[in-house]
Structures are given as structure tokens and as C-alpha cells.
Length: 582
Image (cartoon, rainbow, N blue to C red; front, side, top):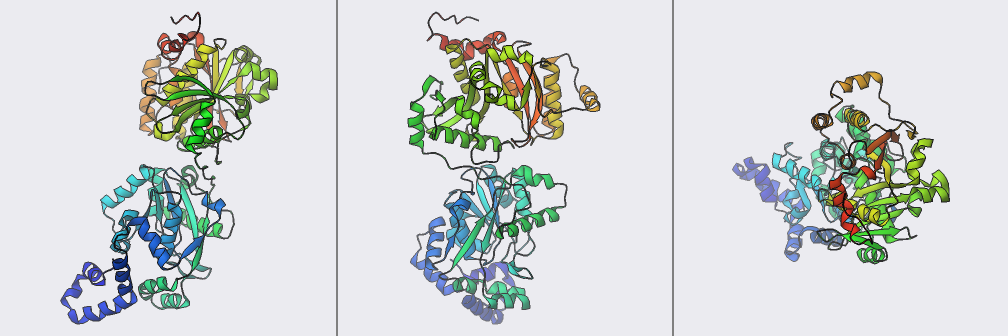
């Protein structure tokens, strides 16, 4: 536990040669820092580590917190996040905040200075940073970054010390920019939490006279917090694309904006950054399994995942989970609605193709599909999602008559890179084998607005060049325009008549910008023989984080034989009089 003599030897080794000074200093500090009480606590609870230790300390002081249920839901249950907070008490408020976040996020850690690192039972909850010496070892910085990149949560007090008296009340001093650098590097959202609490008038008086003296009084102040309750105000998430929009400002100015944002939400005023709501909590696993079993199983993947087709059901745990996971997946690439779940009116009359992992009891990913001719008959164009983004011309009618609209496809992040999209297409193939009346697939395919502008322009120019759409079919309601001068500039990067060569060039140019060809663009462009895939137009979607939608149209009559054998032929053996050749 706390050992004053050890701390003095570590930070002030020169005292070892001055025993006449060390003894009175040690004695005074032991009293101020309540060393005896700390050691008694350690002797009584030697077995406690980590969060059990945190809870016992809070119980020891009968120290608690209050927060509304609504605001607690703003703490994301998964995914990387940097949580910033003020530090009005400088002790138990940090442990209380850790307890609050940990009740939602077991993977949370606190960025802690070297004094707090002296409390060994807390080590499992901490990531060390050296605030006293002003230098943090490279390994510690790497540990913080790695924790976030592994989708962990971190709590940081940007002031690095307790709040003091200011003309506007009890406030943090200047904030350090470390939290912003960490969040920016990992592209993590930032969650502001305001802590309502205060120390004694004696503490603030000492702080005004001599700041180091007030720091010595912090432990005494902690013992004065016995039987106290503090209040938390949890703000909404500030996504990476929101705060990165201020990247042109000086770092000091950006940090001040976060400081002001935090204290504004404490007064229930609008913050300074655009925010988004926290994603909803996961649905119970067994409820998902039962609901899926009521659907139609289309097939099974080689590694045991199951493919289901479901109609919409009101108050369905599957639909709620699909909406939640859509938002998780889309936010991870800078898209999303910003709502708790990504669900809309179209879901109610669409089919839902779901890839299910029975081992993990988890939805891997999903597509939604619509018989456009049946929908046109029942609801007109208002029932077709892509018609809300594009104006359909007369030339689109033949495609709608034999078409299947695909959209809102996702694979949740933990299954990325595991052939999950390919498995979803096995499900689409199973459906097409059952329903051969569909000749065309179409729907919006997104390019994240988080991509650099140059990357978006390269992609759209390339796909317009090699997958030109029929001009009389569809027009975006909010077209993505390329100026003539920009088109001339982009043309200089490509030869314009050699797809393989220009695709290689596109990948190289995108790689230099730190991005790649979006997965679905790769998937669609490789499905068919030349002329079988068209991108009819491109437009901006303001309701989906300003991403760019490309309206793709696929002619299944021109499906490559290899793709036909992969996705459709295996399911034809279950159909009477089926011809599996292609």
C-alpha cells in the first residue's frame, strides 16, 4: 500500500544523505497522507486487487455517486473510447468514475500518474503516465495506444491534477493535449463526463496561498469525503469525424474547446462538438437464437455458421440486434445514423438475410432485400429505399420488374477478415436458386465520408470510367460532382482503356492516401463479365454521415461462371429439374 519512506526515496533520493531533514519531513507526510490508515486497510484486505479493491475503498468511505439511467446508457458497451473528465476532488471521484464505467465496460483502464501507481492493488486498472516528471516512457505510450487499438476504453483526467478555485467556480486548470493525441491516433470517439464535487474551503484557501501545500492536503480531503455522494453528467459521444474537423486549429485551441464542451454539458447546455447517441445494448443471446429458429434456414457455411431468411417481426430481438450491429459496423468506418439503432421504415417490408454464429450465439452480419416489383405494386416507389436517394427514370422500369434490391449490408467488426461477406453471398445465392425470376440485383453501395477527399474522387472517377451506368436509368438526388478540371487531373493518373492496369494504379494511389478500395466495391466489380455491373450514379447521403452512395446494378445473366458455381449452383441440387451448369 502507501509507503511514505519509499516514495521519498524514489523521488527525493538526496534526503537519504540528510537524516536531520528526512525524519521530520517523513513524520509530517505520514500524518498528512494517513499512512497508518492506509496500512491498516491493506492489512485488513490483503487479498483485494483491481476492481474489488476499488469497491472496497468506496465502501470504506461510504462514498457513492448518482447518474441518470438515460445518461449511463451513453457509455458505449463496446469499441474503443477515450473518456475525459474533470477532477474536482482528486481522489475518490476517480475511483467512483472507474466504478461507473466499469459497470458498463469491464475492459476500462485509467491513465494514472506515478503516485497512483504506488497503490499496487490498483495496477490491474491502470495505465501509467508520468505527470510529475513530465516524461512518459515510450513503452507506456505504446501500451495506451495498443489498449485503444484493441477496442478498449480508457479514462483520462486531462488536467492531470485536482480542480482549483476559479472566478467561475471549481474548475480544472489548463488541460494537457495527451487525450486528444491518443484519440486521434486510434480514431476513437471521445466521451465527456462531468463530475460534480468539491473539496473543503480549507483546501481551496491553501491552494490560493501555496499550490504545493494544497496538493499535500489531498489525502486529508479524501478522508473528509466520508459519507458523501457526487453526481455525474454523461455527455454524448463525440465521434472522430466530429473533432477531426477542427484539425486545422492549434492543438491548444482544440483542447480548450473540449474543456468548454465539458463544462457546458454540466449546465445542460449544448456542447461545442457535434455528437452522436450511444449504441443500444446487445439483445439476450437465447432470445436471438429462438427468434432466428422461427425463420427459414437457407444453408450452412463450411465452418458451421447458419444462414437464415426472415420476414420483419414487430418487437423482434433479431431486428433490434440487427439495428444495433448495423450502427456498430457503420460507425467503425465513419458512417452510421448516429442513433442507438440503425432501423427505418423500409425494414418493415424487406426480407432480412442473417448470418448466425451458433458457437458464439452472435449475428455475424446481415443484408436486407426487397422484391421491387411486388413493392412497387403495393406501395409504389415510396416503398423502395434506393428511390429515396435516387430519382428513377423510365429506363429503370425493366430492372425494377425483375429486380431484387440489396442494402444495409454489414459484417460486425469482430468478424471482419473472416470470409463473412462471402458467406452472406452464399445466402443470397441460396435465395436466387429458390427464386430464379430475379435477373437483376441493385442497391446503394457506400463510400465513407471519413475517406480523404482525394480518395473519394479517385474511386468515383475510376468506377464511372469502367462501370458506366445507363444515363436514362437513375439520377442522384444530391449528386457528387467532379469539376471538369478535376476530371482532367484524374484522367492523368489512368490510361482509361486497360481495367487491370488502372485497377492496380488505383490501389497504389489509395494506398498512398492510407485507404483501400471499399470491400463491397471490390465484391460487386468482380461478380460479372464486362458489362454485367454498372454504377448508375453517385450521390451524397446527409442522413448517413454524408457518405457517398453509388447505385450499383448487376445483371445476373452475366455472372462469371466461377461466381455462379460459388454462390448459386451449390443450392440448385435441392431444386427440382435444376441445371447447375454455367
